Length: 105
Image 1 (spheres, rainbow, N blue to C red):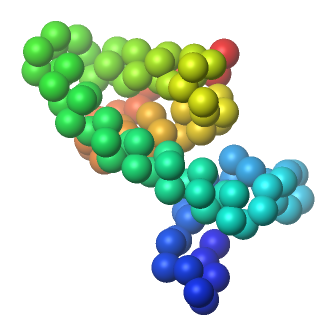
Image 2 (cartoon, one colour):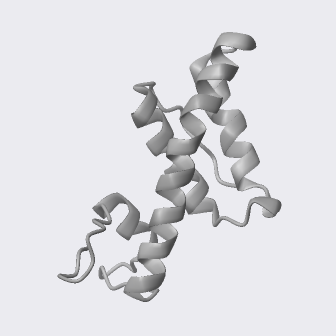
């Protein structure tokens, strides 16, 4: 999703979060783009945090990702459950860590 007046490319994996079975968006393009920017920024911001947890607490990569997912899935985070899952999947990709199975609450 990219309009000629906007430079932000929203990947298909994120668009799928807001598309119905027929592929039609359930939100406006602007809302989708804003949510994507928030989620992408958060995933990038969490890279250093996850690396610190790995080196300080030394739990497994999967456990760190599960804990971050649990925090993002809480009501206080202000994210939809599907967004929390997408963020952690993207975080795993940025870290080059395998992403564990994540269950939405």
